[in-house]
Image (cartoon, rainbow, N blue to C red; front, side):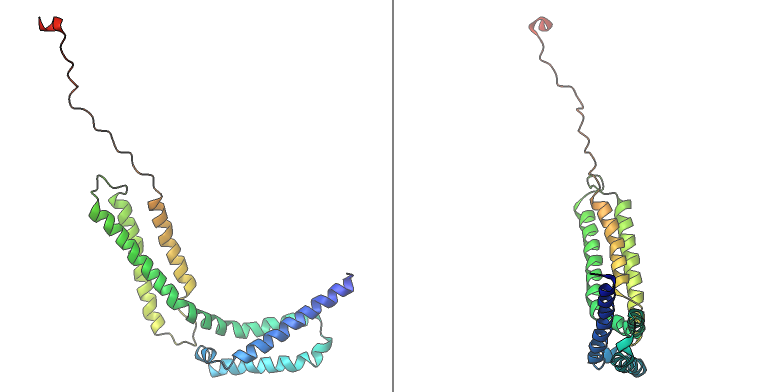
Length: 208
């Protein structure tokens, strides 16, 4: 393949990407889920740009260069991505909230079981280590509850104050501390020392 063939192929790919984006988003723009997470003005602006681009593709676009296709695609994505992000988060967030609440409860249950069923002398973990884990869990739960209150007040067409990515970071924070704890080497149990030496039987000479 020579340079001109490669250039032609790259241009065609850029044009196809732009055209496919226009068709895909134009079909979705009146979807109920999209309407929920966007305003009339946001959809109107995006719809106008899509129509403008569609007309351009079959007119001036026939002779346009690769960079022009790419630039127009980038500009359309700037309008579409915030809407797509809110729609995606609306799908992801309930599952993420359930996951982190489950992790909080199971971690607390893990610590409670250790404290209930073992004595401080016999358990692998110190009270300081267990309390450190509980402290992190408590802070994560407090953070989550604050964010949930704010999220409840946030309209669907506004970017969420709580995202699945935020939750994933907090989950990782808890998981790091939990794994650090459970991967700890068990402490060695000291062997019991004999209080008295075993008495040796006396020989006949000692009895005389």
